[in-house]
Length: 169
Image 1 (tube, rainbow, N blue to C red):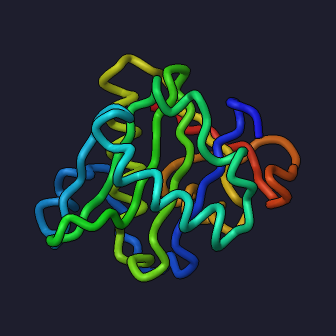
Image 2: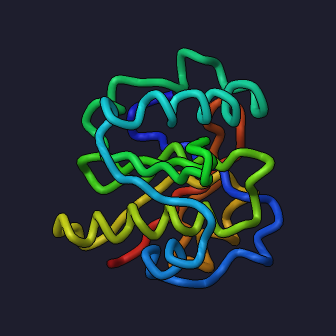
């Protein structure tokens, strides 16, 4: 996987995902907390979750999952009340969002939306005019509901079908 590829894993049942663009509003009502930070602060929580979702569930090779870009990204991690990481994602310095992952037991609870909205809001605050991501095709509807638009043809990343998606901020 190249540094421009940004695998994204979202809940399969997205009918219950709130349609909100304000992650802080979603966070206030939720039994979990969302943290933004750098890799040194969030690696211990984000890395095992990504390994669980991408390497173990989806059979992505380990060497393609963790990359040097983590060190320069802003990471978001949602934690439950006990401090267990439930969802994560990252924002690269060029405005790409990637490595979106939600633990299987926590899917369809709005955590993916909260992480995506927090990263999008952070990109907006940093002055980006758009964000781009590489969505697994099964999650395309999720991103469409969050204002992303698909472009181009489907392609494989780590042997998983993806589509490029973009959102103007």
